[in-house]
Length: 251
Image 1 (cartoon, rainbow, N blue to C red):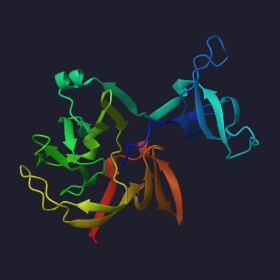
Image 2: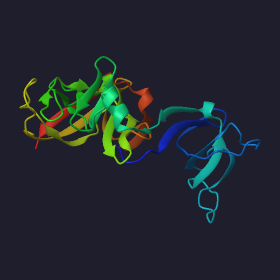
Image 3: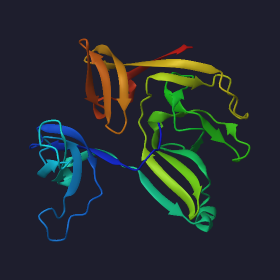
């Protein structure tokens, strides 16, 4: 999980709602009074079903699968992945208690400091962030914050103008692969070094059968699973976090 840029993505229900595609929402303002007023520009694979669709590369032909740009009604967009960036003055940050660091805004515990943007498996086997408490220069380990309780990730960084606050959506799922393990952590004590590495695999329960998770694309809101010998995509909105099972093997 990384905060690398501020690109925005959403699912577009085109062709009268018959076809859904993941698209990038572009920061283009249509001229006032134009035919595109009130619409938003999107980038995706042709055919999008968007208004005035054209190839993103002006030298390319508009054919199936080619990146294309068009205009759509924002009401036809859902499942947004929309990062946000603001810069606050140091005075405002001090008055509001904003300090540099990494945080997760949660449903039940408010804003929780975490040691990184990468979730791990908690002792109960669920994806969780390694939560921290106490002063910034002498933090102690807090109880893990379940990822499905977090609603957004927040990175606060000092910049010339003050403090930059970048927020991004958070996925309730854990990406399969190698992760650090912190089994030696004790809540209330300083963070301890990693106790090793584990390889995490995941399966998802669909229609009464378990399917291996190949990868998860947070921006595309898509989980890729193995089904009938093939890797196929499914929307993350169609799978509840409680339907995903995780297994960790030390390496």
